[in-house]
Amino acid sequence: MGVSGHVEKPGCYELELGIPLRTLVEDYCGGIRGGKKFKGAIPGGVSMGILGTDQYEAELDFDIGRKYGVLGLGTSGPTVFDEDTDMVSVARNITRFFKHESCGQCTPCREGSGWLYQIMTRIEAGDAKSKDLDIAMEIANSMGSMPGTTICGLADGNAWAARTIMEKFSEEFESRVMRTYVPVTINMGELAGA
Image (cartoon, rainbow, N blue to C red):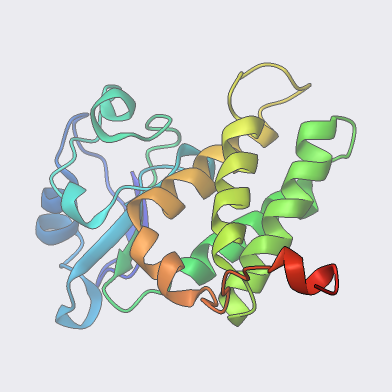
């Protein structure tokens, strides 16, 4: 397993399938860098999605997808995040990667990847509105709702990555959106000049 991210000793470790992520990080990688707390991890390639803070005990095996709400084990090269990681920035960076890598042949990937990146950029900058979260989730659910409907798996991977980060770290996304919407009631009598 090639471990990277916020660990004291990143590197390649040859271990048995099924080792808990916590054991890998603490017993082999020297723990979270700087003595900080675990926040999340990508089990193996960004397209697999992300493990949340409460999933530090996840067993790194082929059942990880079914058990922990990720696509799968992927490359089994975990990227570990510490407690100070801005997950909105992580999502924006991942969607930037997928937007850049899209060849543009398939509409779900070409359009969806661009839209997700634009929305994540607005959220990160604090320029998004609450409805942008709903739109981003709708796009992510639509792009990856039927795996295999595009030429390659890029759209599916983008969808899984964005969706799992937004779901497992929803409070970070919600705290970054502008809550300036005030419902307007219209008095029809005033409009008619009554």
